[in-house]
Length: 116
Image (cartoon, rainbow, N blue to C red):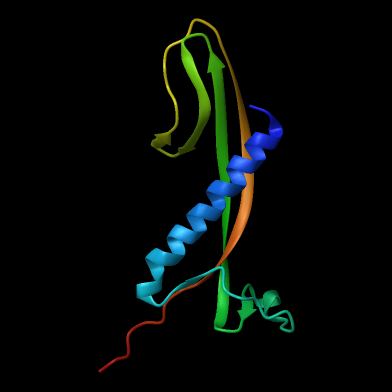
């Protein structure tokens, strides 16, 4: 896989993941990637000021493994603890490389329900 294809696929999957999570948390009163208020200095307290409130930053460090070899379909595998996604197969000879992708996503958590 060429670097430009790797970058394009990685960024596309990050965006698709953010969009899917935005839809999933909307009914819970949470906001993912809110509109940032550039006039605030709240970041020195570990938060980002947004027009909707204060966001936390969720940091991701994802290891991506690319394996190519005889008899194995080449592809990207994402490994997170005991869970793995990607291509697999047996091969007499293969080449693999691991790349790390780091990115941050601002998140406003939902407020607790009002006490009655």
